[in-house]
Image 1 (tube, rainbow, N blue to C red):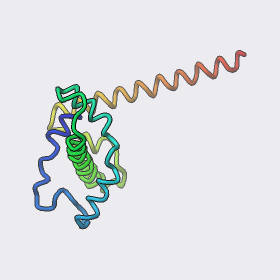
Image 2 (spheres, rainbow, N blue to C red):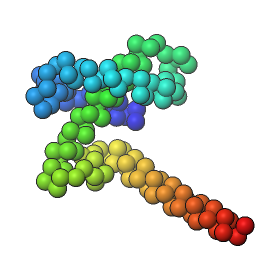
Image 3 (cartoon, rainbow, N blue to C red):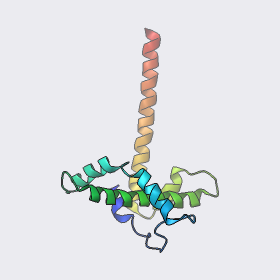
Image 4 (cartoon, rainbow, N blue to C red):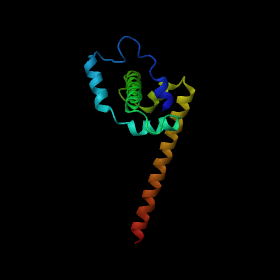
Length: 136
């Protein structure tokens, strides 16, 4: 994710400030303010893990979070454009967008595989619980 946050700001210098769909500047800024704080705890830990101070400045965390939220929003808008032909947004749309960035593509594949493993483990756990309940 740090790769995304660090490299995700490119492309926002198009004069629109990364805002799409004809929205006014205030609307996008308000949306960012509403979402602020969502990733702050995780970002603090990641920043420390990458060599920052154990207690980074709140302004720094806020800036990194704003960059991250802008990147995520931009990627989802692009994915929606790709998916508009089908009318449904899927993980394959995200994979299509990051296909040229081998590190991001590999990470998406890894996370999707891990998600599938977790689903299987949860399902197996539920089956085991049902067997135990019926035996008692």
